[in-house]
Image (cartoon, rainbow, N blue to C red; front, side, top):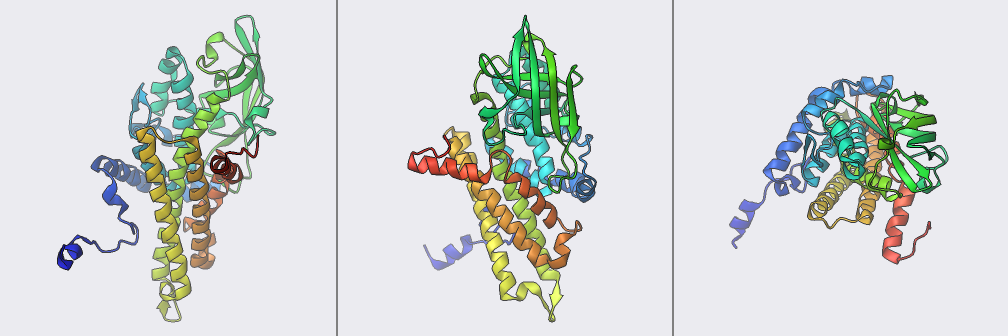
Length: 397
């Protein structure tokens, strides 16, 4: 091959797609990505800083997301799109580039609540809930975490016992996204038969919620406590296809796969803000991006954003091929959220004092990521999962 031919195949460096990752996506994947990016630009970015400041996420956003087919988009049937894992991942990336709270809404709805019903529910339960949830007409939440049971869900205290044909459910769940706006809660509890999942519709006697306030992170997201005071449920409220921790853990793995991609989106948003600001901000008669110390920060951000995106894409291809293991997802979340935190903190320094205002997205993403690094498995736990995989020794069992 001549040098001229080789040169003709080389494209110029694009700062926002340094490794030309766009080129390895299919046309369909790019179309889905671009559709979600446009939605975020139109429906999220103009108002999300105000939502964050007020601590709200408008319920009206859900039907608009439903119209795009993003709720449960990786599931098949029942009004779900049946999209690929990569397409779902790209969606999570673009949503979290808007805000972690919006991606959390979609993740909890599709990968936790809907997936639990789709994977472990009866046909009647699927027909009752999934089409409405896919359309955004009904919202779901996922009740697993408790005040004293976070990283160790097996120690949950919520219990369910049989009473004739009915079940009596009693306990408390904490840090539940969508809790107070949910039309149905998927609640996990210990029973004499093992860990079972229950569908608890809003308004059921004995079932109440209260929102968690004074959060400094994930403010554009509804986070609630679920209180279950001897809630009586009919026999058909239980998810029939699972009676162990395999049920909720399978849902968590679906959700944290989306987080792998979402963290890359938050990192990209911070990098873009820092790059734009660095080229526009003039100090000492020069753009601050012309100084070596700022270029070092921007280079590190570009590295982490591209590394995270490539890792997400590789895991997505593995998931579509059926070769993805839970341990692979743990490595993805561990790397990508830590990378995103580093990008956000560096970007905040590039922006100086402006970096702490909601006029720019950086401090909002930085605060959100402090929750993302903890939920769906803390960084410490995922490090132990990876450590156990490479040594064959489980450190926390």
